[in-house]
Image (cartoon, rainbow, N blue to C red; front, side, top):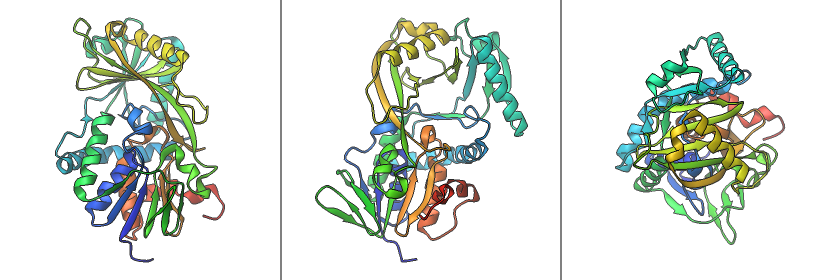
Length: 370
């Protein structure tokens, strides 16, 4: 393997910015290529770091990967704050999973049972116990689970810290869009950025940059609302609150400034990022069922982002061909999986074997010649 000095990172979301920061800090000459860093799905994200709350039968490898990455987050956040000279945005208050009707509570029972089978425990709570923990929850919430150890991060605070840390480490920002990634170079509209190694971390657009990703990454649309507490309103919950509301996945993620993020719809509609009336209606209706006091909040933003998804919901981390790596396809777990992804990519840069857990994310799992 040739000596790597010049690294091109294609994509400036949470994964790309984190790789650029850590690679530059490790002594590589890094160019991050993105016309608008810190935008896209990372800008829209809720920022939940919740592998247990998102555990699903058949996705045990993803749960293990997410759990390993969650353990790395506190140290990662501390390093980021020091490198950037500002807050990382990490929140440590935890997660409550809630259910409204009988079917919702049955779904939570399934989650608890699945986790128990894997040797992981959660605490079942009644509606009254939930309201003692979070008084803003309404009477429609009949039961739930206390999920220990889950974290959250203010995505926009973290993105600004990552930009600052990458710049301070010496990463160069190229404000243009990549059109193709190939060994030795990243093609732009009218020029190319030469490199020893290119890393594709361009989210839902990754599939347009290299043929090995063309049929592997698809966009999944998610709409998110941002609310701000007004002076007369009840404060938001301290913890992240999430769960099914009449069967629809719902989450409420508090922010340090008194804000609240509501999400998220999920639609397979290609590269459509327009916010729909139906999406806003469902998000507000379900959130108001959980927390009636949001009716007094100010609606300050309605946005939509595109999750980069794969057929098995695992990311794609590994070599596509000599000189080209992928670190993409993180679906709804981009922020959660950032530390473990960055650690794997840095190991590959050094010519080392990454952690065994990363093998499940190798591009070769799809078959065919990489």
